[in-house]
Length: 121
Image 1: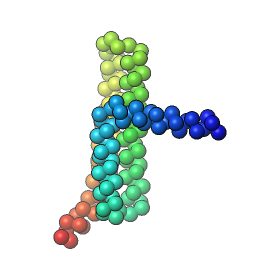
Image 2: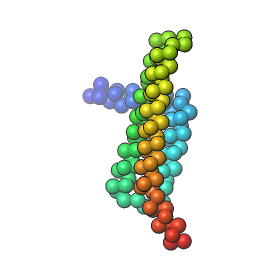
Image 3: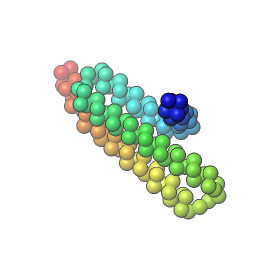
Image 4: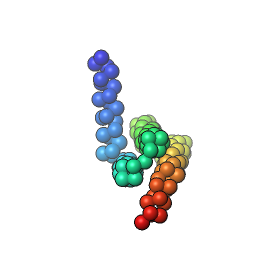
């Protein structure tokens, strides 16, 4: 049981490191909080909540994998290395595409609610 509980402790320590050291992770957190706030105000459906939660989780997972890869690459060498640079660029692109997909999901889900709200004003 101790190992199981430690796995959560380590995961939360990693999340803390991610949020303390990565500006983009903090930006993702702010965006997630804004989306959650909008969902609460707009009273979105349970299915819509599920999609938003998946989108938010995927962005944070991509950011965490990107950060882990960068930490590992920097541990290997701090010198300029073209293959490591490309690897980091590809990992950053994965975060970008995930974030763009999450924005798309957010627009598809929240857009109709916002249009209905503004249309009724």
